Image 1: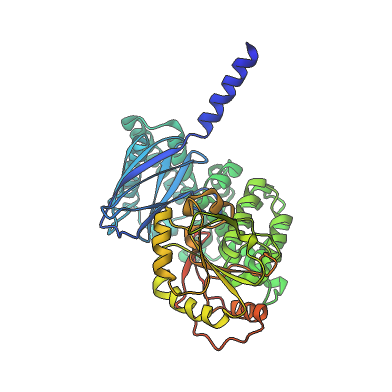
Image 2: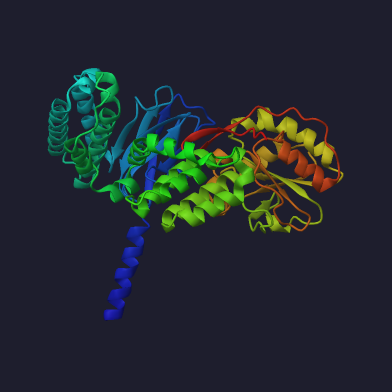
Length: 499
């Protein structure tokens, strides 16, 4: 009987932990090609959890597993907004593509918590509008600190009043209070840095009272650094001048990555916890060094991730981003299951005999038809005597794949394939394919192993050299296609790599 009860409890736990968030809604004035993505916001990599199509009527629906309670990002029509979500809650969302954030409304399980956040933010804006920033920064330190403490009382009262009015969850109330502490700590940090210059008191240095207040606001450092990207930004800003001074003494070479230098700097900071160092260096790595223009440092990025970052979750997330942007290591056997137009299964690693240029694409990506296909036709025609071509589609349905492939690649040398389930399939996720990576290209050698990184531009000189080397041909000068911007770690990166 005890064993039966134990198994029942285990089954209930598994079901509750894996409960999915169901999301649906309507976006007015949305393009039929528009896609919606949801992203968990506290991580360092910002990889999408799901990519949902929008119907011609602007309607959408889907489901995903929310990995934790907290803030999430929703993107649509090149715009984004944030909202608070607890695991397993369901969402109904309405907005307008012409003013996505301004018209964004949530109903369903998450309504109360998000109404609380929206209302407190409006109240915060009212309170902050009455503050003269320059006047605050020129106040003597005692008066400034008194003003900050008064502001803290006002903001926390606004939080508590709104929480009682809406009956918001304690967890989201604490989230807002933590966010407020970070904002107050940032105000104090700015004052400490600029007061002397603005007030004309060049000898000014922050007193222990000011430092103690900032310390009080950030005393739960390790929890804040894991939960709040804005707290990581605050930490980076607070050490900016110190890091600059350290960097100048190092005489860095031109080929030294930002993260290499920052890692050496963090080794000197004995007062930082390891989890703080992990998140800070991961933030720098994601924002500065993991990008298509830094492909030559693939191995160096891997080494830095392994040597400097100790936290398993942070390390795993960074490696996923690394692969999503730059692809797997050369020589890897690409065990990616594909489906042919007649429904037969094949693996990417089975494409053997001749080198193969593989194109990953979707019908809804605006760059594929206008920019990529015409140039790809020229590339295929030039190399077809020595190379094979595979066009891998990630549309949502097999019907859309068959329609798109026959129309888009008619007359091309090569074969069409589909990843069953499209962009949201497990196969696509395991191969680190996301909407922001499309279209992209990889080279598979005659033995079915990866022979290149991911490329986002057919005019990339590294790709042209790889194709020449694989075939023994010499391509004419190619005019690079219009560069595509992809989102990496929250930053837009130009995909037109240069040497």
